[in-house]
Length: 427
Ligand SMILES: Cc1cc2nc3c(=O)[nH]c(=O)nc-3n(C[C@H](O)[C@H](O)[C@H](O)COP(=O)(O)OP(=O)(O)OC[C@H]3O[C@@H](n4cnc5c(N)ncnc54)[C@H](O)[C@@H]3O)c2cc1C
Image 1 (cartoon, protein in one colour):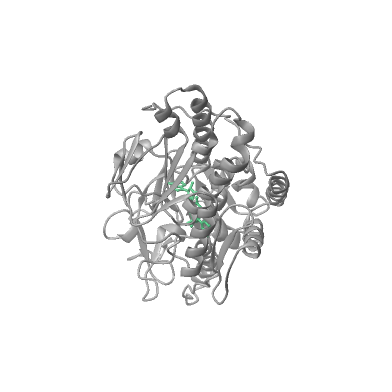
Image 2 (cartoon, helix red, strand yellow):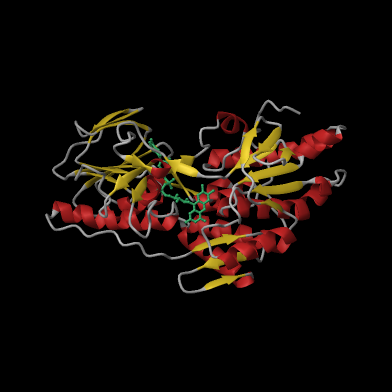
């Protein structure tokens, strides 16, 4: 990989997401050599992926070059590489561009979509975990409307205009809200010769409410907001299959649709060498102690979504969200320096900064630790927080300007089929 060995200890970080970037920033001006590896050369701000999928934002406004984040830091190396295996005995990783030895290894590889073993659903559904996937979804939504215009078969037209979202968590809810706004504000203008009232948006949720991780008030309010927007919410219904045409469930309910979005869960993106039962627990996440050390090792760590730090309060580890990832990256930076200076480690203490979700314009739900609120003010808070955590001044400005423009004009101008999404449709 052409990375020189220096007198500084080498810390290899796998993944430039929230956790990996927070850690790299913390170590960047210290006497350590930091090697960050990612299969993409950019950091993705995943909370706004749904806006890319629905034409509200261009993809480059929620992505940021990793090299630029750390450009001013000495002793920092980035390599565009996919890590294929971790050799814990030889302190070495194997990647698609070569092997690399490490003194300390930090796995921050995040998570991937969990299809719970259903390969049919995996094959036919749309995921929204990466920018390319969001662009695929954007293209498919628009292609479906173009095709709906052409067909004279009413069943086919209905299926093309039916959107089924599996999972009533923040991702499903935010996507449904955005699709409902497209139906209301964009479709009648863009497709005057199509009966856009036919467009139906469904959320299918196996639990008894949406936004299960939030307060009962937030969940109820989100349901009210979505119903006002015309979204159909099906609770206590579990999707059992989708063959590209029909969605079947564990009840009599079925849906005919050309678009099933799978937002029903994620699992840790483990890497060979640390993927056996010895290391992995619930949700395919790597078991770590309170210092983020991987079971059985003092120099191997996991942070962010991939790490499961189990405690009485969090029996399945911390929620797979940006805040635990950022805070763990930051804390591990301190602890790595303490290890090098031979000082005792400090345990990770999570500062819960709350959860929020937005449901179309002017509506959001926010649960802070001591304060819960919903509606317009919550929507402003949601926007401010997302702008604040976006990386890069340009991105913040672009997103802000887009939001103001979209708000004032009731518009979403990025409704472009730049890269058509080709799929063998069954209609
Ligand atoms: C659609 C969506 C909406 C979300 N909304 C919110 C929200 O509103 N609020 C919130 O707090 N959280 C939200 N989340 C969750 C949040 O984005 C994650 O919890 C967070 O990104 C976890 O950070 P991480 O650093 O652990 O992993 P990630 O940010 O996923 O980063 C992992 C990185 O590792 C890289 N990588 C993985 N495997 C390899 C490999 N083998 N080799 C090289 N590189 C590799 C990936 O390319 C990626 O860059 C959302 C997630 C999604 C998908």
